[in-house]
Image 1: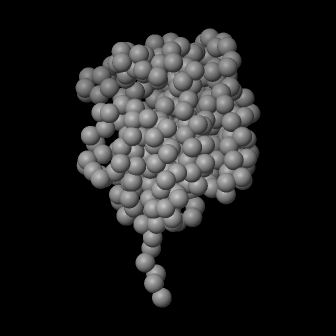
Image 2: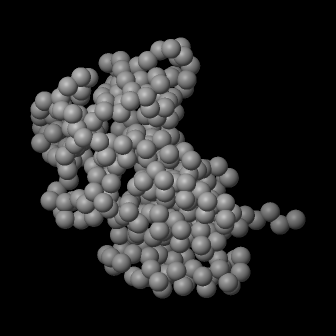
Image 3: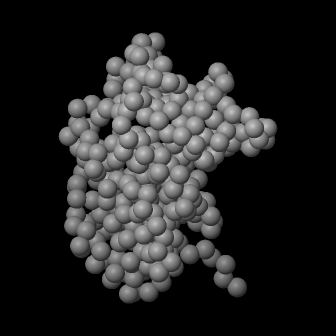
Length: 320
């Protein structure tokens, strides 16, 4: 009996961005093949480091036609998975393109920009029989997994005080790109914070209240009350938000998570998390569409409400 595992054929949408190499590495590390790539930006030479023989397309129409052609050539040629690293506002359309071509979709965060898009995509999943997966890699980080176990084993009525601070400096280019347009990126809380909100709601439970204290194009802050936590959060892409002692080390990024005054260290260990997610998907698991709903609703509610200012229980960085 032949037990040789079939090599899975992948296509990739969005090859020139920051996160795409992690997907290419994950495809290669899991022993599979990247067959076709779409990106209207042709600065995608990184492909040569992983899959130099992949077909490359600048226009989505030609890419779509190519996937359809491969599908018609039979199971050995068809695309099994489409990995999506395109701008946030295009995720919904590119997921539909994948499923329409009889392939599963593996999509970066945020899966979609609006909560109701999740329901529409679930209908298409049912119609096509293909699955939509999201990259929720923090759920596989060892330190985060250990923290969730601690919370799960804590008294049911215990509520923790959590401070989340994430500052990742960006230059002027950011505001000239799609990331600087809220209609395309979802704004700062969505673009750089969605994976943290997923992590928090996964660990501490459902949202009970969601208050925004500060919301600007380059920074935001607020308060989330979850079933088992009171969370003060602060996000920024402004270098000036970084504490002076961190600037003195030459770093342009600052990440901090504290719980009841205890620092939860998870700065390291990110390198291979995408590969872990791919392994999980290929093993028949993976994070499915419904698991994105909580964080998607959180970031939607953040950008749709008015900031109330520094009142109540707010993050101390607001005063900086």
